[in-house]
Length: 239
Image 1 (cartoon, rainbow, N blue to C red):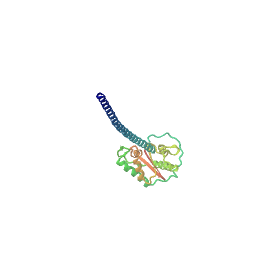
Image 2: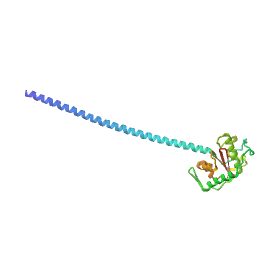
Image 3: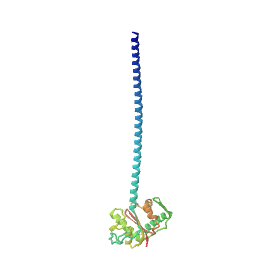
Image 4: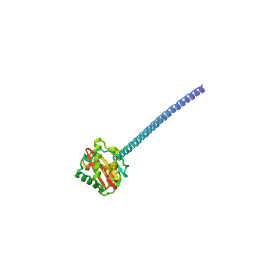
């Protein structure tokens, strides 16, 4: 009888120990789950931060690429607005729509003011689009270049379009030669809108390609005109 009681007691103690072990194992499993959940949350947070950082970098890269593209387009547009011819183009007969008789006269005040503004800028030098130009010799007014400028301004105002391509497909060199000006170098600046000489010269100074024409030592003479909203400046050096 005592032996049976002893065995029963041992059996109960064994069950208690077994249950205790099961409880411990359950508790350990809960801790592991909590740690794993925390690690997963931290990993998810890290991945989210990395994704956000990558998105910000991509956005900055796209913004820089867009800015470069806009700058390139602006430079190309400015280049189209300024034209320099260094060798005479082939002779080609063209018809002009403006005769000297019907062309408005360019006043002495306009001539002197334009030359004075340009020479003032040439005298002090300039940085044109980051390229430094030292002071350049003064230029002089040339009536043939002035005539070419006026005819082209009238052509542009008639078409209501600013372009270096003129009547009959002409360029600045052909227009200068049509006025009897034989050149070594010829260049042209155009503008639309400004009301006075100081403003238009200031705009040309701010445009790298126009500024380079104004500051170039290759040019010793100039003629300019305004018809309605359209401005033309023709620069040249005779043969």
